Image: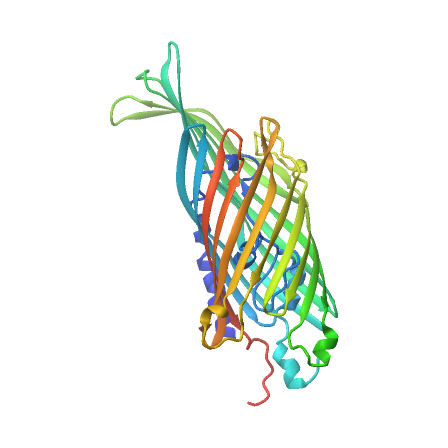
Length: 447
């Protein structure tokens, strides 16, 4: 077990640089700390992101940390995606591809369920723990506009931004009878950079103005969750007229508002091209290491799911986030463009034809589906942006080191800001792997 843990931790730290990949071209990521990243992993994202009430013995769910107590085997989960975004404004369109590593997570039950069989004794409490590294928000855009002024001539403005915030989350869950409770503790960190450049084409000795704003942020975050799970056919299971439980799962989660610190550097330079090889840079303004602070919103969610044995599951989620409390001393746009409270509604589930089929592979596959609708904290012309999407995918089992694991493949179609000056349409391809191992923390009966 020890060498597996070392290998997994090495993989986590070796992969952290992959989070710095391109974040695409989304002009709305200029506001706030960027586009928020979904805490759901690939298997629940493909069901519309219904993680509040989702329980699974072999897949990780950190949206509601109470679900960690239901794990029956150690799970190592990694996910990535590729996204094709089309921006449209009137007759103008722009298409760009982006991709990123979405998360790396390790979770395990604190006590192997196989020990209950060996000891012939059922534990009163079940415990689970997880460690997760993932983005919290992403910033990525590059926009060019051209204009002209009498006496000055033609000039070009370029607006660009990149970076984002990330989080390392430690989750814990405990279950007693039908109730589960969980706690997430995390560290928030990141770097965000904005640039604005102005180039004059008809003035040969004019300065090219370069404006830059860059800041680091860091802080601590926490969240809690609770689950109530009820076996609806308990008497039939005891009478052995049915073998698999029908379960109703009700969940609630709360992500706290998060205070964070910022360290800001802002500058303005003038660059003059004297000939084809020489440039002169004039520092018009620079300010370094300006300390500040900010606050991220509180989020609350409710969910319900119904499981018909291993055959199918259906669930729904509802969430609220009070983005109106957001503030950031390093964000110069927040006073002119305040954020609004948001809500989201999602629906989804899976269907599995026959999990025990031995000769027809695709009957053992999870077929996942979902849809969602949500409001965006940003507004254009006092009209709050909205987005919606359709998701579907497959959870494909495979054998790795004599254990059943899963490859989670998903697709998502969505739109953001329909009817606004800049509308986004996107298509996303997702790929995740969940590796399971049921030999952690098992008692040795023989030496």
